[in-house]
Amino acid sequence: MTLKSRPLLLSAVLASPLLFAFDLRGDAPSFDPEAGTRVDKELSLTGAMYIDDLMFIVDGEEMPAEMLGDVLDSAFEFEMTEGVTDEFVKSGGGRPLVLLRTYNEFSMDMSFGGESQEMDEEMDLLDSTIKFTWNAEEETYDITYEEGSGDDEDLDGLDVDMDFTFLLPTDDVKEGSSWEVTGVEAGRLFIPGGTTGGSGDFPEEASELGEVAEELLGPQLEDALEDFVVDCTYKGDEDGAMLIAIEFEGELNLDFSELMMAALEMEGIGDLEFDADITLTMDIEMEGEGVLTWDNEAGHAQAFEMAIDIVITVDGEADIEVGGESHSAEATLEFSGELEYEMSVD
Image 1: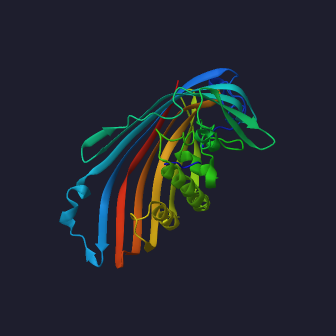
Image 2: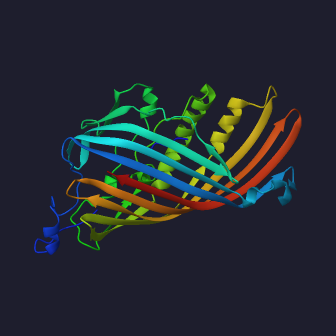
Image 3: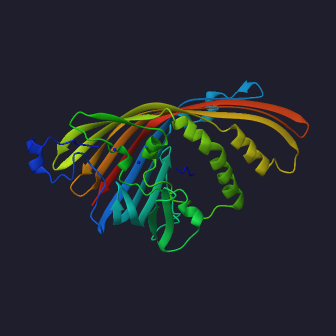
């Protein structure tokens, strides 16, 4: 479950009385925390998804609705919480140059149809401190263990940015100013801090399939995000902080057909020889809004919240010949729900 893959405020008019309320570092907000600053961040993601429609046909016969039981009336709910401590060792040019991140907490609870399940597997990076060092020559971060140890693969999906600096404007702004964030940069909105490795130990086959999924779906996701736009607007100040409102509406289309064929070839169907043709697509429609609260005096984020309405449609078809018999299946699944992000900084 990895995906690997976070600009605002104020151009000040020197005569404005707002300037007397803030110790502004310039005409635009910037990431510039004092060296040695330590902050605790808690990020939570909660969601609820509901099945709106389900059609399943096997060998030309549609499955009766009553065979589905209460599944259409049940909600899938989940809550994930992650707590980290960031130490800004050195910053410059609007980015961390050296940052130490300690992973303090990770929990996930899920429920379906009223039955809850607490995930007791631990994040691989829990209690570890990770060092992000800006490599100017490569224009990327070198990511290493400062404290703790583990597989380097667990670091591959991490993102240094849990302050959503990619939402900040690149030019001076005034209240009401708007700008856009697009493409892969906009996609960082959904995975603050990136992906933090797996939970627990996975079989070798699962790890191999995960690598195939990354290889097949990664380029698709980048292509799908090309036209994705997040609209940002400077909404003024509140209680000494600056507010950036965001909103977006978009659609992503992904094709899982090759991945499904790869999974079938890896797992097989017992010891039987088979021939299969599988297509599986997913369409994701999203509409969301949120607010980044920026502490311009401290030079880092103060809070973040975002709510998303989402509709996912999955269409699949399969023709399989196995053991001298031919079978076909087709299915459509549509479900919708809400996701809520919230991050606090102390």
